[in-house]
Every structure is written in C-alpha cells, then in structure tokens.
Length: 226
Picture (cartoon, rainbow, N blue to C red):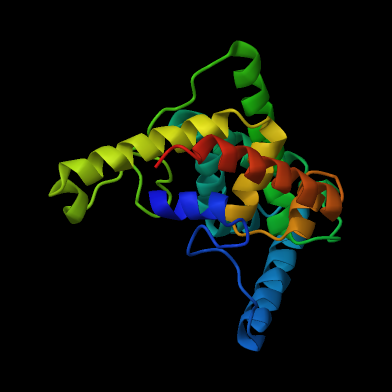
C-alpha cells in the first residue's frame, strides 16, 4: 500500500489503487448505464416521498462515501461525521436533483465539499490530522500502520514502512485543501479529471493544473523519504 502511494506520486499517470479506472469494456459500460437507470428510478421515487427508495440509494453508496471521506480526511471520527452529514444533506436537497449528472457524481460532490470544509477548518486551527485509521477493513485503510508477514519478520522493513507512512501523511498535510482533494479523488478514487472538475465546480483544465501542482509538491517532499 505504501509503495503504491509513493508510486502514484513519482509517476502521476500510474494507478495508485486497484480501484483506479481503466478503459471500460462494453459490458462494464452497459452495467454502468443500467446502474444509472436504476439510480434514476430510485431518485424519482424518493422525490415523491418514498423513504425506502432513498434508503436503497444509501445502501448502494454507503461504503463508497465512507471510503472517500476516510481517504480525504485520514481520521475515522471526522469521516463518520461527514458520512452522516452527506446523506442528510442529500436527502434534504434531493428535490433539487435534475438528472443532469449521475447520482454518484452529485453525491460525491456533496462529500467532497464537506471534506474541503473540514480540511480548511483544520488548517485554520493548525490541527495535526495524522490519526491512524483502525477498526476498518484493509479495503479502506489508506495510511494506517499496515503490516504483513514479510514486514513483521523484517524489523528494518517495518521501520521503513512506518517512516514512509509518516512522510506521506506529512506531505499530504502540506497541500492546500483543494490540492489534496484533487489528488485524493484522482489517485485513490480513480475519478476522471472531468468528473473532479464537475465536483469542484471548475473546469477539467483547472483540475489538471491543480493535480500537477499537488504531484510536484508531493514529489519534492518525498524525494528524500527513501
């Protein structure tokens, strides 16, 4: 996991996570279109007052929302708070959904903005957000103190892993909230720059430039971390 994060910084075009998107097959495209159609049907029902329909949407995206918040905030309690607030906000404003984008994009925009607000508050309070994540599955445990059999059997490797985890967290914390958000969405969520731009109410080109700045800063910060 640590080497994957380092790789994404040193080679920004590389995928940092197994979930990073590659070119979709025709079957995957069909599945995505089918899911969007199902989402739209549930949204229309929820907009008419069907609470069970909204609950179905929550079940569909519950883990994805929590995973995104954990990746962006690196703190389990903050992520849980954002997770809850995001779905409450989505429920309150569902009547405003106009089907111009996917529910996935619309919901991620809400989560992203809440995380940005949280990161800005941290900056203003000069918090130390380097809390390790625990009590969650490996699937969403990004910067926690990960171990495996090989590392446990090799103290030098385990020390190197801990040192790199700290360096990565420190480097991410030095990015601006927007730079960190773009980097996280691109490399850990595998989103396209166009989608990221839509979420942040900006252009794809601006998102691309922000990603470039973030990657350059991280590369410089981690140059001596080996």
